[in-house]
Length: 130
Image (cartoon, rainbow, N blue to C red; front, side, top):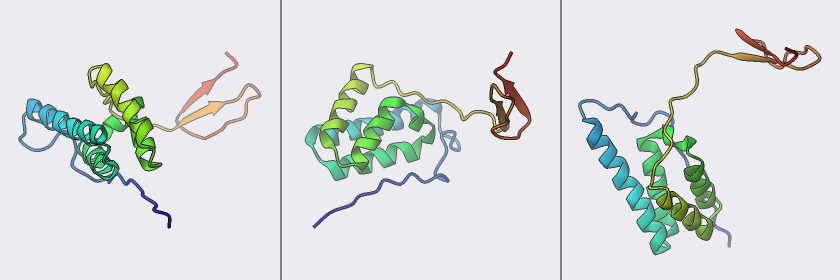
């Protein structure tokens, strides 16, 4: 009997910039959600760790760009508790600082190969022949 689990991040979840909450409150909420993830992983509770992870990234979708958090998510998705714990310890060692960047501009980019072929049409062109 196999058990398959899937993590899902809602794209239309609450955004980081909520209504009326002070930035410090948001930081505290994110810290609490991250601590809940650490606690669940420390206890070895895979289901609770998955729930805490989804809660964290739904609260602040931009942090999915953090490499260690992405590794934790991949480990949880593949039910690899040991790997998730390992990456969580690395994250804790760097002070639980998560990369949270705004997405890049929505301008399409075309990349020209050395032979002048365009990989994707767009507004800006990058020519590697220069």
